[in-house]
Image (cartoon, rainbow, N blue to C red; front, side, top):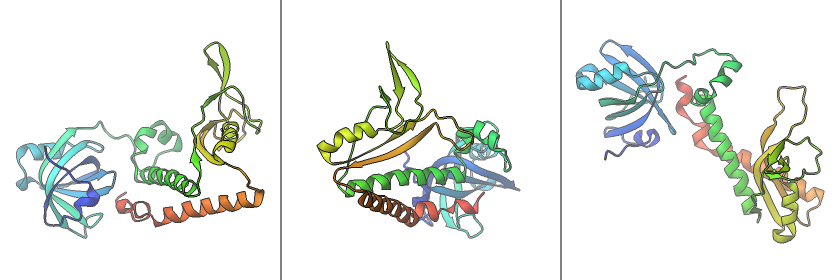
Length: 265
């Protein structure tokens, strides 16, 4: 079995032969060279496929590959400032695992179209970084509260009653009973306060409130801490420190702020 590297590890192997697996992000052809930008979860790298440096099958696959095709490539890593990230893989073999259908998203598209093609738009550099940031925000929120002695609890999402907000609830049929999608885990968290003193839930909430704006969310992720012996001032300080901690940790994260994607749109 051939061991492949992530792109972020491959750039540390200048002058050595590596194997990469990923998806085609961009492609262009110039004479006897096909330039393919490969992407994986860690970034992008330019691949140079020269007709006289690969066998006939590799050249055929490179010609037939399309944006978002799944590929496996092998070659030597070189530094090249002309490449989008300063590194290039000079291919010795190129294989299509699966050739994608024509990619429907071009540079300028309406919001409605991008929402209709959401599963494909998620692969863009903008959405990739947003998803990474979102994952890190979740991680840091939990890390902060855990470090302050909180316990995470997992209340049910199907409930028999709402919280104190008075929000309209989504009614669901629960076998032969009437139930609702939760609009807050507050009541469950409050029941756990005399048990564990400091708890939080991090789960979806659903609210069927009427809204006149397009910004209203009927479903969203809800971070709800509940603490014993906290007054308003102490609670506010905890919230401020939570937001500050998340913002600072996110700003320090190289995967988001120092990503090479910006150089290849």
